[in-house]
Length: 429
Image: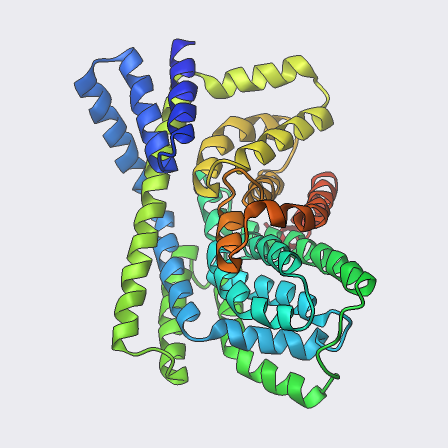
């Protein structure tokens, strides 16, 4: 019991003091070890657990996907995707709102990063939408909420992390499971944006042109083909997720050469930025794996399961309680460590309740993704407001209906498992 109190107390204290999450996790883990064993073996054990946590072939996919996304970001991909989306829905009332959501879904799926999406799409779409009469607060709220769809729509680094934390749930199955929930999230945001556009009588951005749609689609095809190449190759069984990530890097490099969108100096910057992001993610994973181990050592998963079962033995009630916990966690913890820490706690319980680990993985990541948009520590919320140069308090009100729409989709996905499981079942997973 003392170890549990030390783990939670040190973690919360450091978090409140503004210490980076990775160090909060690592120091809390070390402090808990010191309760049980002397300093030298405690430090050695934590270091070993961190190193062991990174010793995974599957995890090699993450730095490759990060690099591929960085290369694609450099090549003006966002502009091509926005032009394509505008040719499809730009003629509708408030069409730029739909364009932003669709472009964020496409760009997020390619980059695999919500922060990259909110930066790239928001930087391009924000000024355009304000010129067309959109309120700056509404634009920022939509940019923030739509950017998280790429965490569900594959290829997604977070789904790979969940596969690792769950003990080997098929990455291909998780990728397939993410499509329909991700599309539903985007559709819900489009419906809310449409209502706002009609109520405020926002303008269209031109008339429909089949020729423009074909041209913009043709320009966007090479970028979109990356998704087909990666997912198709994994599902068919031509290569593993790790091999697919390396192929994605080669494809992105070839594309940048053909587009002439990146010179040698820019490539050096991309490699440096990818290294920085990878280092941050690796440190989060390493410390989170160490904390996950100490939590098992302290029997925290069993204690949490027993506590939830003492409240109710109704699977629906327990699942709702888990979702409330995950939504709260997502507001103050980055999604990668949250997945690594809370998957071992909740997954055995929900599997015993008869819930598919594939379905639960989508529920888990949807919850934590929504948390990225909420205060006090939602990283996407902070970046989105920073790009728009707005204080967070001004974005909260227009964000509420979008947040509610995402919660409704989450509830639907929870209680209709086939939304997540239809495609994996169709392909034999």
